[in-house]
Length: 468
Image (cartoon, rainbow, N blue to C red; front, side, top):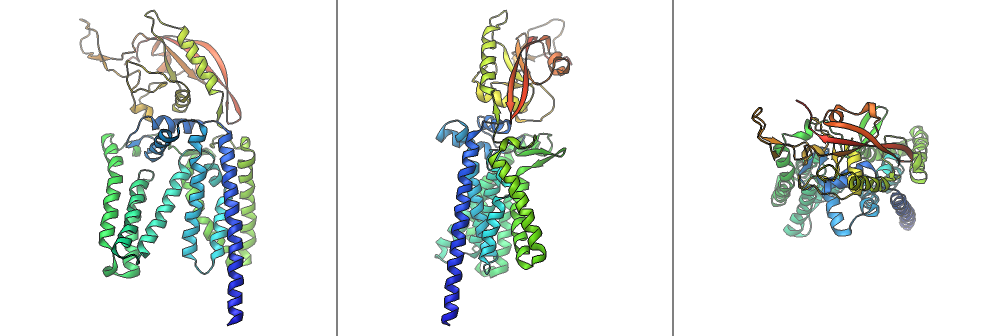
């Protein structure tokens, strides 16, 4: 008996040492991620999220409203800047690490080291580290999903604290469901799964129906905004061609970084368990983990080597200089009526970057972004839902030869400045056909994720709208 107690005490001390080493390493990685994230500049996806945050809604063409609304709240509390935008992701990675530890610890209670090595393995995944040094919502959404699983598990096993304690556990679970569904619509399915688990483990008589109804009401409240928004916009999130906020481009395909993060978080504990079961799998898994750790080292220690198409904490340098150039050109090039040109960018990402750096209001279109995206029939970004220079909202001039035109764009006859990476012979018909004359004004350099780009600034004279 004494020997067993001594062995148990020794095992507990060893486990405590490993726990301290693990969480010390995770905290050190969190500090490194914060340093890397803060050292860069905003990129296109972050700028798009920031612009969406200025237009609060129940949803966006690119995805759920949760991340833009979170950034809107973040800006209200802390202001603006790269630190304000990016501190959330490293902290979310830390929260996700804790949620994973809790889930694995309760799934495999007789092997606590499995939870420890699972957390360490996840923190060495390249997609996990990539998502934790930029702000595209992938790590935040993943953290919310797994924390909600923890809350649901706790609600299922809650037996102490009387009715108040049990209902309180379900209430907290419901709050996370309601908030979490703003980030990930299918998260609401966790409620019926929790109910099934509760009935299976304890029987119908022990189920806290008051708690479950409370959680369901909170979930409905969270679902209301997204559902109404999608109904008003003909379920555009299921029919548009817009890439998601957390989209990444690799090997000629588009992936969701959030899905890759969540897949890794699920698979790593299974790999750790497999390694514990026998040496046949142990060494291949360890070697694979070392390879993934090397990729993570590149991301955290030399992010300039991150391949094109992936989000990078380096971001876009020089956008403020481009913005100052545009403001100067806009002040200098007034039309015959003394009006300043309006600004157009070739893509939503570029428009968001420029709009993040300049502040322009157009009295003709209240609530419009500072920089428009070139008009297009395609709903490929949220810019398509915001006021645009092409919208026919002004009363048309009476023309005895053509009386069917009731409204026109208030920008008719105005000049514009178009910013793009396209050469003059590559300009789209939506620009060359919509203006009487288009000419190159100036080329300006830009550095995107460590790669040099040249932006071309064009003068577009006398907007006449696209011909039918």
